[in-house]
Structures are given as C-alpha cells and as structure tokens.
Image 1: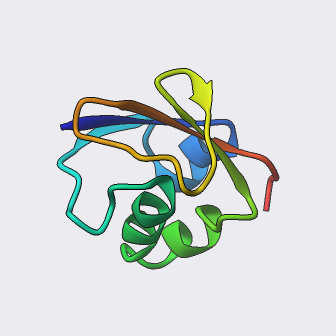
Image 2 (image 1 turned 90 degrees about the vertical axis):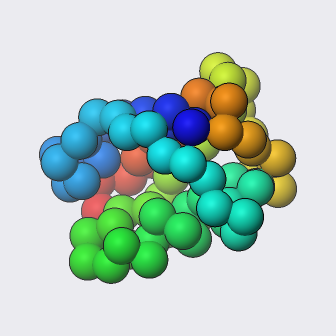
Length: 82
C-alpha cells in the first residue's frame, strides 16, 4: 500500500494527516491518484484540485505525470487555503 501524507490546510479540511491506500489501476500516476481521491466527493473534490496542491513522491517534487506505485510515500501539500 502507498502511504499518503497530507500537509498544511489539507489536514484540517480532510480530517487526517495520513492514510495507507492500495492504489487502483487508474491511479498509477499522480494525476490519477488525485482524481481517485476526488471521487470521495465533498471537500475532497475541492481541496485536491490539481491547481491547489503540490505532490512529492518519495520526497521528490513531482508532476502530474509522475509514475507512482504501492511502495511509494506520497505527500500532498496544499498550495492555497481555499
């Protein structure tokens, strides 16, 4: 399972600082992971918009096309309070 870490405003908005997640086949890139998490609806949809977060994979800044796997540590940082 991938370890997902949430930082900044996301901790308060999403009500958690981390979770372990088995990545579905649709989430093998950062873009797909964010889309998958947004399917939870509500605050997840707004808070994890691609233009509102920065993502690090194994402590390295990533792009939306960065490949991810179940062994990665993925940090999602809010880049804006909204």
